[in-house]
Length: 208
Image 1 (cartoon, rainbow, N blue to C red):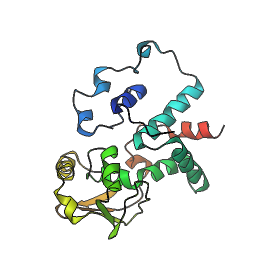
Image 2: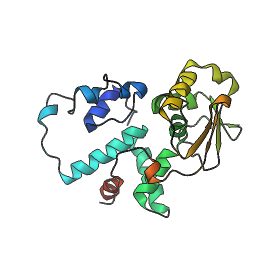
Image 3: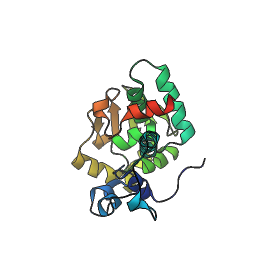
């Protein structure tokens, strides 16, 4: 299955809630969910009630699309979460939240996860002084993420930092924007993860 390359706002409308895939646009009246609060398509306003399976599937799709991972990748994350200690659903979200591209986004170096993924792939970041260009790289507590010296002049990064300072940052990261670096203080708890998802429904879906 290829990566989705269609309109990002369509994914938000399908879930009838904001997935914050377009960065600052999601905070304005131009947001597609604000303008049309129903699923896309010819029959979007007449869709009936979902079955139990449909509800579980939509919850899985919401989380998968939020982090921009493919179905095969998502299944591997679930299997990894299932093998670890703790609540499977919460561990799954923690694994997704500590992906390199998501950490770059949460730290405010990129306006959205798609842009963060592109920046990481192009080699604009160091982790603990080492070059990391894999978006799925697992960032651990105590790791230091830093923008490479030549990349600090990129308008995307500078503009994102300016907006991040205004909006605030999650409590599990510590930032030094003046030196273009940030530190992961701890693995985010469920309360720290800014995602309106019922992860238990995903566990039920994959456990069938």
